[in-house]
Length: 318
Figure 1 (tube, rainbow, N blue to C red):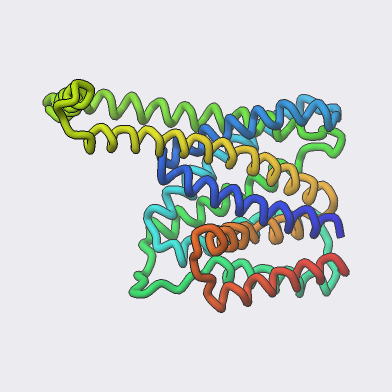
Figure 2 (tube, rainbow, N blue to C red):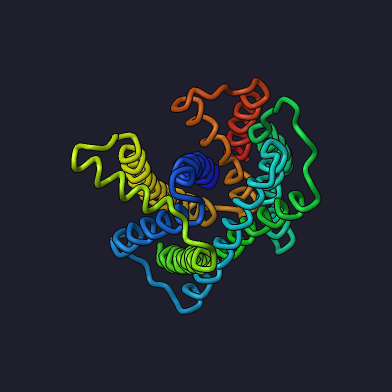
């Protein structure tokens, strides 16, 4: 019962974090948005972990660090996969793989489920596919590279579940804190490397006249002899970046809550059940997109959401 409750709730919260992360990525870029949100989540867990308590062994902390590395790989591959597209096919593929990998691992390493639970897992996997599938007009077939990277992203997410499951119940949230620290360090390192690469490339290119033109327009506007549109555009970009940073910080707070719920779900019962229900995260993203951005939810997605609730009820009874 608690596994289903924590995992399904965590999935919806994680979907909300993905929604915020997508909004932030549009403003400040995917890598920087992920790094900033990771830092916000790290600070949140640093405050909450001591309040929750627990005693983590060195093994727990090492497993948390390994989960952080897996999480960084998962995030990088996930964004790259969705950039290749089409999202309507690769997104559910990633979600299904992220559910199947820990489910197979859990059953292969001694986990056991009743007959009703197996049926429920089947219904849940169907729900994952239906929720993540958005029919697109003129949709194209995915490339081999997109499929391979989608499978890799799902496998990395599944690996996160498997690794974090190795931590002890007595360790509290300390493994998640280490996980967040490692993921944040990796993403900031990637962001820094990309920034240095871009700066190096800019130095090798001929100096553009646009910056000087903008500076001249700034001076003209200040003197009252120029026009305001260029300055307004600069201010708009700056405001957009500030908004992106705020959204990324909110994303980090929500993501920390989601990871906590998912960890509680894993510790409350079988890894296989927690992983499949945790893969329902597209549902939270879709619902928020419909409520906030007025995006249309396809009938097939409503069916998927209904099946997700049915599967959760079956698992709770089982």
